Length: 294
Image 1 (tube, helix red, strand yellow):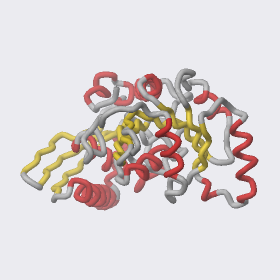
Image 2 (cartoon, one colour; image 1 turned 30 degrees about the horizontal axis):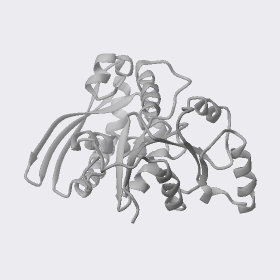
Image 3 (cartoon, one colour; image 1 turned 45 degrees about the vertical axis):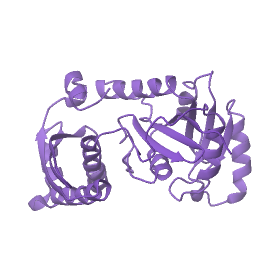
């Protein structure tokens, strides 16, 4: 019988390489928001996968920022370096067929005293499959990796081999969390993330990066949850974009977020979403702390 192993695994990489998609696919629930818009993950998210022989505690990190120096991005970069300092294994995610200067910059952050598994994601998008072996060979030359695993997070391809490689490096330990837990984040936090995901998905490039969600009320009454949340934007002009003609865009954001919440929380949700302006919020250290940024 296999001995139980339990440990922490950081998921690290440049923005938009599929880190959150990988985490969600591994856990089997959407606990980290996914969007085509780069840099939607702003917090360290812990996802927990418990199997008979191991408990994998994943830390999903923001994509490391090199272009912007405001308080929000400094907070996000601290999240990356803190995650690397606290884990047993690092999963470094890159896009298959692309390893550029940004990836090399992230590689320089990797700890020298723990295993780094390189994940080449999005293999489903590789049209010429004969390129895969040369790509793997090139990646192997980029650093001293414990393993290189090609995967498709979106399609769920090659995830068991990835877990098998990660398990090799986890310590023998008792469960760190209860078997039925999938995250250490509160329902209030997840509600805000679901709204923020819909915001980026439905508005996309029209929406400036400086937008976040602040849950002002979260009440639980049996299986019912009453939630009131504000979408916080930097300028008054952004408010009209989010509300949309006749309020239709905001209604759709709220409706789609509510459906996701009801599925995850397994109960009815009454959700109120509105928009408010807080100029300069992304550079306000006190406000960032109140919103849960580290």
